[in-house]
Image (cartoon, rainbow, N blue to C red; front, side, top):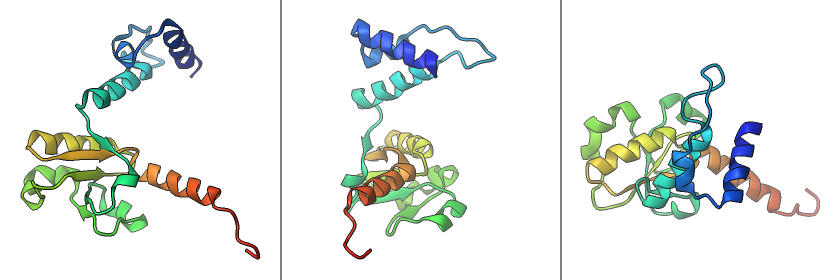
Length: 156
């Protein structure tokens, strides 16, 4: 972690951009990490969003939207989204005919990784789609944050 923070601090001091993070040549050691450092991955994700290659949306924009939930059945037992259509990611290509071409599809999963893959599939097939940033984990954190901001009622 210290290595990544030091690298980011150096980039900030140099006036580097998100795009510089994508291309940065950082030292790697197989026993400690991959050839592409998390700093590179952060740059790639941010760059994809800024270039419009990966459309994202947030929980405050889901009212009335078409929600596609690509989580597994076991995950839905724990928490489901009313009105969301559930299609498992491995089934998505064979079930594209069930989705609307005339509406934006907001794709959700637990952490947004599977939603990212599903959004890419949808975009490649001509759908208007975006990934709900942070997935259900972001929704849970937003719910917690709102609860913490709400003052307690007297007598509770």
